[in-house]
Image (tube, rainbow, N blue to C red; front, side, top):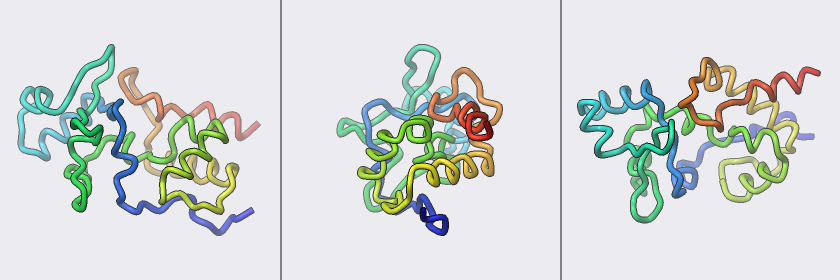
Length: 156
């Protein structure tokens, strides 16, 4: 066990900013980003958000990258980025399923290669709690942030 290892240190590579699904951004997150970009909410939504069912997603470009990620510059909305972005790599799937964790560890250079799954989960749950990333979530919030049942299972 590697208790002294930090599970994740962001390398700002943008690997987590790529994917055709997009990132869920609830209304409060959209409002913060719109204000940061000095846009009214309607204009912001028209340019940067797509709806699918009950959820709103940040658009991706034709290459599958988040529209706010610029290679060699990073995230253009970093100070107000959605909770899902702030939570990476401590997503529900990676905290519940060891094979998902292992795939994320191979994909993301910021995940410590020597960390074991149990330590990753412990550090991830502590991180989510410390930054309030899984508290008071609405239905429209990213499913990847719904992790409170994992904490309950850990304490049994």
